[in-house]
Amino acid sequence: MMRAWILPILLVLCGSVLAVGLVFSGTPSTAAAVLLVFVLLAGVNSPLAFPRPIGALEAQRRSEADGRPVVFWRPGCKYCFRLRIRLGRSARQLHWVDIWRDPDGAAVVRAANNGNETVPTVIVAGRPHTNPDPAWVREQLARSA
Image 1 (cartoon, rainbow, N blue to C red):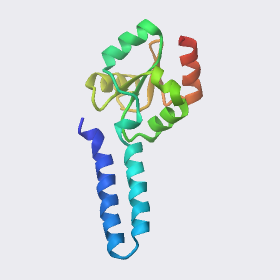
Image 2 (tube, rainbow, N blue to C red; image 1 turned 90 degrees about the vertical axis):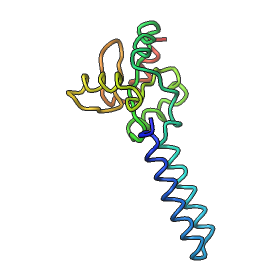
Image 3 (cartoon, one colour; image 1 turned 90 degrees about the horizontal axis):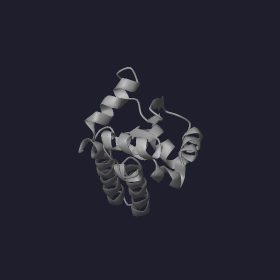
Image 4 (tube, rainbow, N blue to C red; image 1 turned 180 degrees about the vertical axis):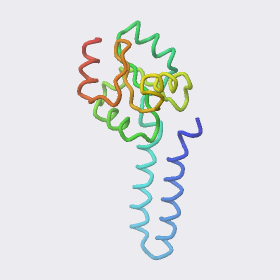
């Protein structure tokens, strides 16, 4: 679980150090702007930008019951973030599995991607799709409803 927070913590620390240096050099407004950018980057790369993850087994069970796709992702993945943002509010209807928190989820992704942990991997009707177009995922979600 801690691995998911390493990048956001490093971003905040680096931004803080840079901001302190800018304050001492006499540019506090620039320091505030730099710190804000680093905090925003940390938020985007944190697990907080995604719906609450569940375990792979639970996600697969729920998907079989309601027909909704399962998304395997990890914090810091720009493609996962792109998928999340492009799905908008409908992202909350999907079942999200953080492969860094769930070893079973990581195993499912490796099995679907020739041993690689390539994310996002979306499982629709038991078939894996690696880094699919967000519009296609939205279409699959509409079909499951």
